[in-house]
Amino acid sequence: MVRQAKVRTAVLLVICILSGILGTQSQVSAGAENLPFTDLSGAYGTNEIASLYNKSIMKGTSQTQFSPDRPITRAESLTVLIRLLKLEPVQGAVAAFTDVPASKWYYGTVQAGVDLGITEGTSSTKFAPEQPLTRQEAAVWLVRALKQSDTTVETAPAFSDKGEMAAWAVPSIAIVQELGLMKGDGGAFRPNDPITRQETAVMMARVLETRDWSSKIDQLPASRIEMGWQYGQTTSQYEQSILKSNVNTLSPRWLFLEKNGTISQSVDRSLVTWAHQHNKVVWAMLGNRFDADATHSILADKVKSAAVIKQIGDLVRNYSLDGINFDFENIYPYDKSGLTSFIQDLAARLHNEQAKLSVCVSPDLGTDWTEAFDYAALGTAADYMVLMGYDEHWGGGSVAGSVSSLPWQQSGLDRLIASVSAKKVILALPFYTRDWSLNKDGSAASSAELTLAQQNKLMSSYSLHPKWNGAVQQYTAEYTLGSVRHRIWMEDGRSLSRKYVMGASRQIAGFAYWYMNSESADVWSALRNANRYTGYSF
Image (tube, rainbow, N blue to C red; front, side):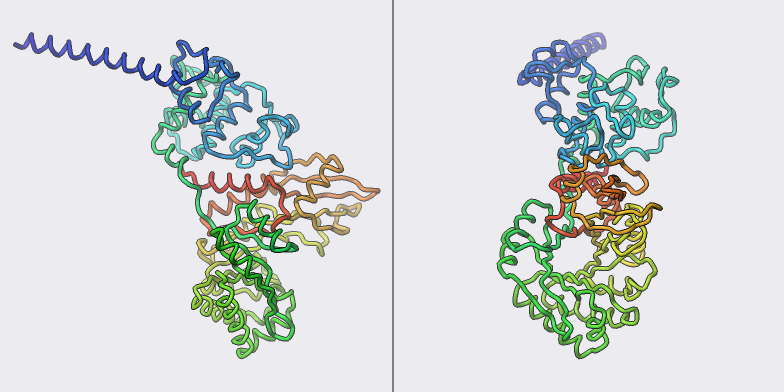
């Protein structure tokens, strides 16, 4: 009986093995039968190629050829990675590399990868798009894209050729080995060999099969406040700008404090109706025209304050506004308590109307300009605090520089969220820059404000070649007009994406943009990518 049992067990084992083999062959055939490629016979990665092809992540080298054993180029590999992460190509206004012109099919995906810091060039100006990607470069790109760079790796890569690995690639190779994304070949990793198209397909397919990464990539992007200010546009023009953008919160400049202590208004009811029909909200901007005396007259007088707050509340109710964006600037330091009290009372009235109150503040630099802001108290009373992350260097200053360098903006944001919950903070980004005219010693003689569209037109007119400045995370460019040297610290999809990623990493409520229709078209796709990518937690 024991012998018979062993025989039956052996027979069952053989059947199971054969079933597994036949099943695998069947799966390969099923995976390949819908492929248009004729060169995959005997390819070990057919299933993975089929999976990525059907997801529109990888394509062939022609209509009938996949070229599985051909080395994949740097441009092709980055394009696959961008598609895997469900990011958009970005037709950036400023080319990141001189060897990746806008006319190339891969321009948009290279720009998208560079915007988010997923990849770098072979130098500060070259990307080498047609050069084969090495296996160690592939490991670095993948680790960076999957945000695994900080993963603690206790042991070095267990490959026989680890002595051939570049020092900068060793941590990434250890990580991809630990995660099972790259397994080497016969105990060797072959770090300097080009990675093939088939190897790339297998590697990318493993990403989608690993843990719950696929579901995270498929999830909807994070929902944040995206506020856009109206300036210099008609209602119709503003609506068209909104439709082309990521904005879900409109802030038209409708309300102003006048010298007589009342609020003038130019509310357009049709815009409110239009916004609600398009599932957007309207926070009308309330400004003080930089008039410190008129502002003092109401902040120092409780009766006048109450009258203004009643007028604002009535406007919110009568026009079905969703909120107020409070933007009082140039306030006397001695009006600090009066401003705090005003915001507390205004918030109470707006909350009775089921409306939101957002308060614009400048970064706390310890100057008279911001002395009137009790950041903690204002943050407690208001629903949101909007940090105006620009005018680091302004038109009246004697020092030429960036309107909004990333380190400066980050410092201001971190200081604010030390006093106010990050969930209440909205970071405002600039859609403008400055063209600085310089003295011979490099100091600022004057400057002219430029929209991003004007900046890009000037770049084209003077055939400028911007250079990326890692310290400020912006491109800079120079040109000479007559005998005067000019310098611009540029804003584009790359610089704005870096600011967006920085803010999103701090879990803030959202972003605002000054001002609509001054951006270039590429900005919105870059910011959509930043929003999606910052939501990934692999």
